[in-house]
Amino acid sequence: MEIIKDQEFGGERPLYCRHDLQLENVTIHLGESSIKECYNIEADHCQFEGKYVFWENNHFVVRNSVFKESARSSLWYSRNGEIYDSLVECPKMFRSMDGIKLNNVRFPHAQETMWHVKNVHVENCVFDEANYIFKDSENVFLDHVTINGNYSFQYSKNIEIHNSVLNSKDAFWETENVTIYDSIVNGEFLAWYAKRLRLVNCHIQETQPLCYIEDLTMENCTMQEDCDLAFEYSSCNVDINGHVTSIKNPRSGVIKVKSVGEIIIDENIKKPGNCQIIVEN
Image 1 (cartoon, rainbow, N blue to C red):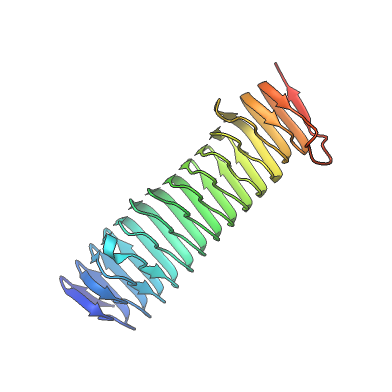
Image 2: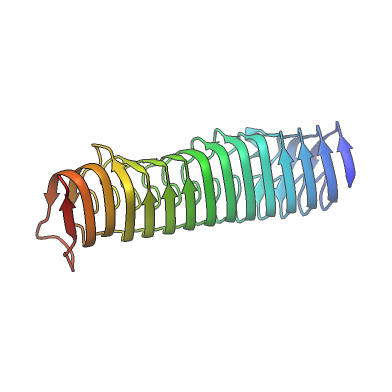
């Protein structure tokens, strides 16, 4: 493998179409497509300032590095990309990619990040300003991840999340096959129009959660007092280990709760309209 160390590059395509490179303490200044159409690239203690850095790449690994805010849209149309122990300051990262691994990476400006990606494994990461993160994505695994930003995971499928904190309005809309374990999900209008959503040992916050869902499962979950008007028009297999402020017009299935403030069943309930609500206390 060729080693490039302690050098600086800028302008258009300085390392275009290269392969088997090890970059050490390299700075990519303003410009475009610096490491485009490459394969088998390793970068350690590097700084990326230009746009479109890793486009159309196959297999790259980045460690201990920084993508500056000017490096927006630097990770698109590539396969098998890994980033560890790094800072990504720019938005619109990871688009139309297959095979992504992240561990201990911070994203302070993660708007419109992770669109149309698949086969993603993320651990110990924080995504701030993360509106519309993971849009239209599939086969995503997250563990010990924090997401602060609205409209996350819209239209995505095959998602598994562990030990995470998700502060996101309108999260998981129109998703399929999502399972969340041991996590806090905070955001109004959670998971409307989802299919096959499972929550295990989770804490849910904010108004009107979990409505219009086909095949909702909840196991040993809790809900904050602001979770009112829950489960409207959803088919449910729900076990809440605590109090629910209000339940409105669930469509079918079973809901078990320790206590409930109000159950609203009115003339607008949808067929079959036979959900069994079991209140233990």
